[in-house]
Image (cartoon, rainbow, N blue to C red; front, top):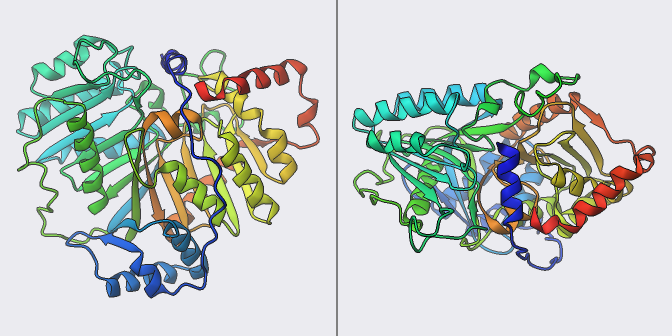
Length: 469
């Protein structure tokens, strides 16, 4: 089903456009913490921080270790415009479906006010059936439950599945319906909602690459270092990453879901008394993680996932570690990776060895030779279908989200990513990268040019249609 979904999305895609390659950001490392603080807005569980408090917060981030790198990335982030961050969060890294769904179901069971789910794919089998039953039960308990799904991403799901939710009082809404007559005024077949967000009581939220799909029912460790049985590689052992957020970042996630709901004309409108954004626990600080929540899409303005990642690559001094499901990045991203490697940064990418959508796999491989020549280290994850979209730069700038490094994510889809600043979370990201690296095969620069001619032809052909993927 996923391959059909992605194929349809690719066929329906428009060309889109990105800004021309700008000059790489030169971070002002001489800038003081006080000056950096003046370029930031920082929300907390209680209120926005004043400049002195923002200065202290920057010092706290630096105290985790590698203070020069923290300052450099903050300087790069704020070089073009003032940046809004959210503090006082607790953040947990979740790996693969079983761990993620266990945490999500625990959160749903505890919901008291609101459950807002926004997902590209919601299937009508396995984990989605369990989710449906739980949502119906929570609605019966008086919780405001809303579900927004992408009409193309969930095209294989029966109408009866969503109707059963509606019949139980769960508000559901299709993003940009395929039939323009089903909700007049909200039709854009090329504009898809690729986000994956679950927000509970505006205090806890989840995001990343994981859809509500049976392919996540098992973890990816089963396939470590060996091939799956014939025909099973696309249905089991998907490798993905999610994050759980407790604190003000969760309220940001809830706000984004509400914006999508309102922008799509979904009914009924959200009751303001439900979506207050206030903390019923009186503004209790949940943790010490500082984050940036970055929604992107054709209708968004300001810093998006594309600019955020490109800026981090330009600012990198020591390491760039990327794990990416769909890699067809375009000229700017490839050049940024090559530039970083050539100035001595350790650049390592873990990419798929198999995919549920082979054209983008071949389009990405068409860049391998250039990247290898520049000193970029490339690896392909063995056997499991790679669906994670993560990066950690210099061990202090980390991102997890729904956005791939491909044309659709950059210009056509609604996407959501979070950036977590600081060494502590960066170490968790680096540890997971190392585990994935151990289950990957390196692409050898001397051997890559010797691959079969047919493979090279597939790559050239896929490259021609890069902007349609």
